[in-house]
Length: 347
Ligand code: FES
Ligand SMILES: [Fe+2]
Image (tube, rainbow, N blue to C red; front, side, top):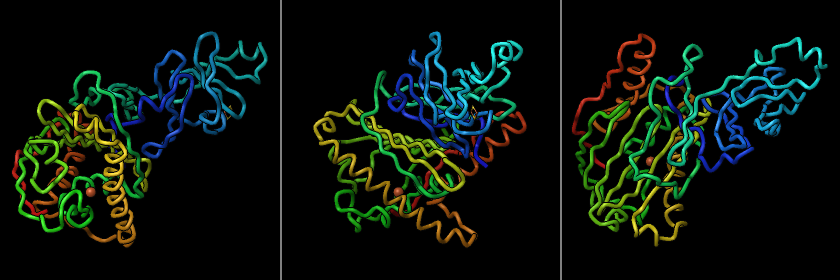
């Protein structure tokens, strides 16, 4: 249903405070993200193995220097490695007679870097990562300058292909400060395979975007990798503006969109932040309204089309999903199905 054996964006580093945890639904599962009192992030299944209440309803505690999550129902406590540390209703001799560490809640490998917390979603048989966590191409030590959250009421596939689709731009994103409605023209963009995805290779963006013109001769590259990681790099005069978008399935019918923006471009330091934020929120809000409206039609289960060349990126997305699934099922090496190509469309 969802791709497995991949790193997913889980949370922002700034969302995890030491000694606290938060609940999140990811890939249809309840996950507790926490940070122990020493500052290490962890993730576990947010369901108590005793009677199934959410563990995140309880508090994190420190016992003998060890951080433990206490279940709100009967007070069972779990270490950050998922093992049970205490069952308060047991008498001393009952505790003695029982191996509490056999009681566990599943934990997930985590990786924290560039202000992002990544969670590895392995299969039940192979929970340990076999691939390196994603890393954005940023100068050392860059921290997020802005974060925007949104929720699309659709399956992750529609969110992903909706965000990479060039043909909707003149219809859904028509605003005077971005481009005028008259500026539709022929485009030709070069693409090539990268990692588990593809790149719209570095190019000078179209002259029809006023904002790009302000930055001064920028070069843009847009990379996409499964499961749903899109990064737009704008580089101008040795400086950068980077927008990372994580498209993360919450469940079958809901997808979390997290946009994390990094920059060191001086012009953006002096631009009031709320303007940049507002601009991004308007864009994402328009995409949300489009995919949410699309759900009404999809409820009738229509056959759908993907056409050349405007929908080729969507075709690649589905081909990448198939190639990754085949690789995981057969053990054969992963072969990126994307071939270098120039795609042409009008937008
Ligand atoms: S449900 Fe968690 S301790 Fe009973
Ligand atoms: Fe869009």
